[in-house]
Length: 490
Image (cartoon, rainbow, N blue to C red; front, side, top):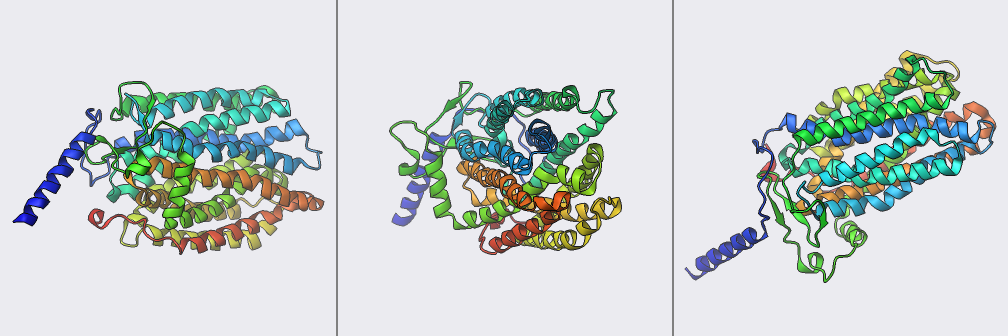
């Protein structure tokens, strides 16, 4: 009897504490079945990530070509300079991603935790994005790229973290698959813009020719931000436009209600508000070794694919000897299959196979495809574009790559406590962006070392990528956890 009484007292105490921690704000979106994917809501939530990939796909295609114009194609250090400039902006993101991810976990706003960053970040990023092609001084170009990346860093983590806020663990993989589908349609839009510009009556090589694509993308960024804000209304977490709390806020993905986290007092309570994102990030990496090992997989995978994205337009134009518009078509061939399979590869992680086994299978697939590309296809296409071979291999690489991306986020969200989804996502993007920062410099340096080969130097691209992916594959075997909890499984 005495024990039962103590248990009842304990439960009442927990209930009282829970009510005390609940914030007095009603959800502004209709609550749906937590065990079924709300397709419409997920699509509109995904529009912020759509904007991210829309901007970055066009940025990664067009900016290296602008840099070539500014620096000069005869400069012997062109590849290293180009790689360094493409990387500098990412160093800013490495520093800022955990910071803004942490801030969004602790944001009190009448617009919710994530939307203030999505709105502010998108609007400011659009301004700097449209300015980029008009700047033809090297120092000015670097400055604008830096400002653009700072703006993108404001909302990149929030654009991902908002999805698990309103999605239960059981359907993370399905939701992530749909999110990647929508986001990569944005990437397709970005890759399609050079084709559209090619049909316009504007002289190629002029500043206006370079600028019109940035203007089109900028208009689309604002348009899709507006659409998202019509349909996505986060649960308010405060009464002001933006206020940073000392405490992390925890979103209940079943009821859409928010409460103050019950984290231990030595972590949550501080005498005064101060930036603690980086110390928290170190604490997370030391405590959660599986998350740390998974980040090893992440950085080497993105090291591989960031090298492709940074130099593919140059590879296509110089090595294969095709035009810019045709090179853009190859980018579309790479991205198209990713969009088609995005939702379905999420279902693989949702199955009894599990997320981690799905990732391992997709990584093995990438390794085989890249090996064939490295040692069979690429030597055959030098100055001799063979579209069927190239298109086929790009598809065979892009499909498992999407399988990795889609199932990565559910692993991260499951490894993260509910109140730390933002900072976990921020840390993920720190490693992601570290790869994007390092890859252009590292691979640009490698290309410079082989500059004596002329355009044939790009023969080393895919072997380098293969080495990175094999290392990523080995890291994956050290990851424990990351699956849906037993209570969430079918």
